[in-house]
Length: 220
Image (cartoon, rainbow, N blue to C red; front, side, top):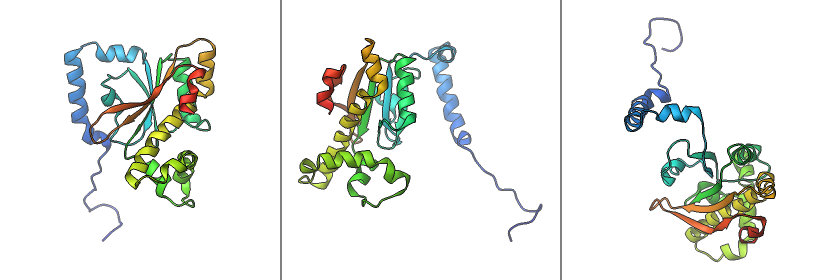
């Protein structure tokens, strides 16, 4: 039976660290063997050149995709790799990365097979909750490009909207107060639109980098 005090065997619970500790220890040991000062240097300061705004999808690991070590990449991830101005988390991250860390590149990276984009295509308009509200910006992009998207087969429509969403988020980043202020004071910051393919692990640039207000037409 259930309840009651002693007598029964206690249930063993596990935590993420129970499973990760051996791997983490091996990773740490490998780093120290390669560079004995690695962790001391990492703890002392961070000076990344890049901010990555990407999807929360577990199959899209930012550092590994770019081949960058810890400390090289400041990261903001959310469902659908959005950079909407009303998201204070993303905008605060962007502001800190540009103003304090002085990053030189902001990367917006989407990926083929994005579930948020598929929901924006397939879910009914009444689809509610936090997810439904969150993907409203992707729905708006879908609606703006409806004439081009509707004739496409479903798989191609999905892939196309994944790309259109990235380009629109680049426009959001480039028109944000943090980036506009940086350009106004002469700070060099480039905003990039990348798409990642889950099938082959390759990145592709969707439009030329946006480096000043005059470049915004390409990402509008």
